[in-house]
Image 1 (spheres, rainbow, N blue to C red):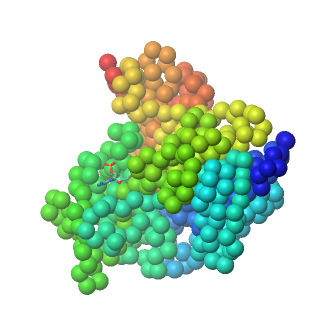
Image 2 (image 1 turned 120 degrees about the vertical axis):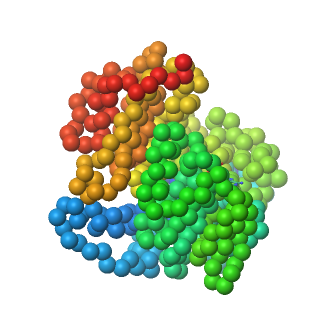
Image 3 (image 1 turned 60 degrees about the vertical axis):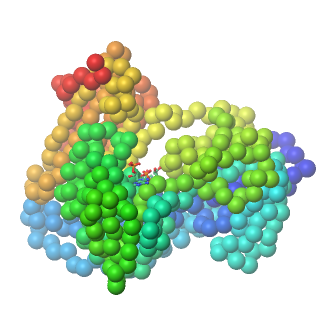
Length: 465
Ligand code: NDP
C-alpha cells in the first residue's frame, strides 16, 4: 500500500473499543501505518463495563438455580454463601487479562498506542491530553490521513430529582458490596439482564418500566413470556410506571413512581439507554456533523461530512451491538487500505438478552412482518426436559415467522435455555434466505430444544391478512 509521508500515520483511530481495535488491526494488516488513542480502558465498554463482565455475572447468578434443580435429580446439594467480593475480584482479574490481550494484539499488529483524551485541532490533526489511564503521559500531537471516531456510548440517566443517587451500568460492576434490595429502572437490554443477575444472586429486585411489557422492540410472544419469566424469578414488576424522584432516608433510597408507589431499596440502577460519546472531541474544528443527541452522522461508507474523517460503532447510533461495531471497523479498514468491499448482512443482525432464561431473535418480529404482508406463524411452547425433573416453572417459547408468498423464514425468536447459542446458527439460515421447507427437511438432534425448530409442522396462525 503506498504511504503518504505528509502525515504521521495513515490511520488514527480514536477509541480502543471493539470497533476501533478491529479497524486498527485490519488496517495495519493491510500495511497501513496506524495509531490508536484510548483514554479509559483498552477494549472499551464491551470488555470492561459491558458484555464480558455482564455475562460472567449472569453465569454467577445461575449457580443457585443449578443447586436447587439438582434436588430433582437425586442430589441433596446445598448452596453455601455467595461472596460478591470474590466474584468481583475474579471478574476484575479476567478483565485485566483481556486488557493485556488487547494491548498485545495491537502492538503485535504494529499499531502505535497512545493514551489520553483525543481532540481534533483540524480535520487531520489530533492532540491528546492525559487521562486517568496514564496520568503522566505526555500530551501528543499527531497528524493522520484518515481518522476514525470509535468513541462508543455512555449511559443516560433520567432527568429526575435525586438521579445522582442512582448508579448506571458504569458503576454496577464495581459496587463494593452486593445490594440486598435493588430497584432497576428501564426494561431494555441492561435493565432486564441486571434484574436477572441481582435476583439470581439473592437480592430482592423491583423492576420499573413504562411499557405494559418489558423489552420494547422484541416480538410480542417473547415479551409476554419474558414478563412471566421475570415474575417467576421473583422480581416485582412495576409496569406502566416511571420514577419521578429518588430520595435518601437514612441508609435507604426511596424511589417514588408516577402511580404513587414508593419503592425502598439499597441501590437504584438506571438502565434507561445510552447516548453517543461525541462531546469535547473538538468536532467544531472540523466539518463533522452531530445530531442534537450527539450521534455522528455518516454516509453508507461510515464517512462523516468531513472527508477523511469516519465514525463507526455506538457513536453513530446505528445498531449498538459489539459485533456490528466490529463489522463496521473491518469493512472500513478493508475499503480504505485494501480496496476491498466486504459485505455484512446488518439487516439480519441477531440479538440476545441474557436473562435467565435468555432470549434471542433474528429477523422480523410478527408485528413488523405483518405490516409488510401476510405471514405464517409457527409457535411452540413447552417445558424443557431439565425442568420436568427439577420441577422449576420455566417455559421455552420458540417462534418462526414465515413469509406466506415466498415461504422464506424471515424471523426466528426464542426464549429458553441456550437461546443465544441456538440463534447464531439460525441467523445463518435467515441470512441465507432459507425457506420453511429447508427447515422441514432438516433432521433434528434428539433430545434437544433446538429440534423443535425443524419439527414445527402445524401453523399456529396467519398474521397480516
Ligand atoms: P435500551 O434502549 O435497551 O432500554 C432503555 C430502557 O429505558 C427502556 O425500557 C426504555 O423504555 C427506558 N426509558 C428510556 N427513556 C425513558 C424515560 N424517559 N422514562 C422512562 N423510561 C425510559 O437501553 P439499555 O440502557 O438497556 O441498553 C443500552 C444499549 O446497550 C442497548 O440498546 C443495546 O444496544 C446495548 N446492549 C446490548 C446488550 C446485548 O446485546 N445483550 C446488553 C446490554 C446493552 P421504552 O422501551 O419505553 O423506551
